Image (cartoon, rainbow, N blue to C red):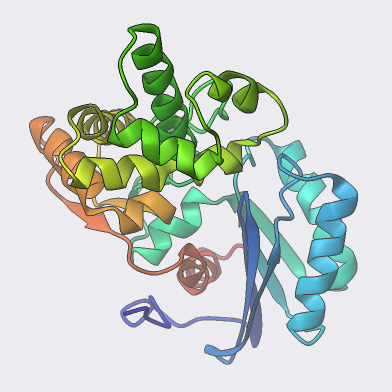
Length: 311
């Protein structure tokens, strides 16, 4: 069941009106809290300029703010993938600011929302969705991250990675002269193709990383049916995500909590089990699976910043 707050034990030192934004690769969710209570909740298309044009991002934000009732928050706290530099954050603030004149706007990498949504101010957050990344912070305020380089350079263990691995597997089986098995048949059905050979052109011509990330349930379903290669893919995904989490934890000198979330991380038990197992092998046992959207971490983040005297 989705909870509507993650700050029951956190100091509720919040401005009168707080707007949270979770800007993902496929959608943007906005939530307005007034006096600590949810007053509006809406979603629109992605406003992440790594996935859509600036013009499209602006159009999606306009739709979102309209659906939220054109709010006038005191504070806007936005999390987005790909916010790796001050320039990234500044560019996104510039897109948001015309819709919320006078508001104090903070932009962070979306892993920070995920950790807070797990009820933690320190620890490690791991995103396993369309892409993948790990980020963490410790009690001294030090931060570290791993992955999050995008699908051309990494995103191991992500939905895109699983979809691509299914294509690679199917093409390898074709080269061996094998008949399409359950995994390949499921992939061809998803792609509306007749033969594995068509996957090559289909992959390179006009499809997007979101398209292939959306193929990941084909792998998960095949694994649930006992398909050996699909089981190995899911296990490797868990291992890759665990390696990122372990790297960040070691850099920060923390043992947890390690919060796993986003589309795959929150919804695929086999991946969760593999993630836990590979982390346990590294001596990390404090693992939490996020069962609510990262945007619910915004109140804790805003409260923490207020307690630290930050705007």
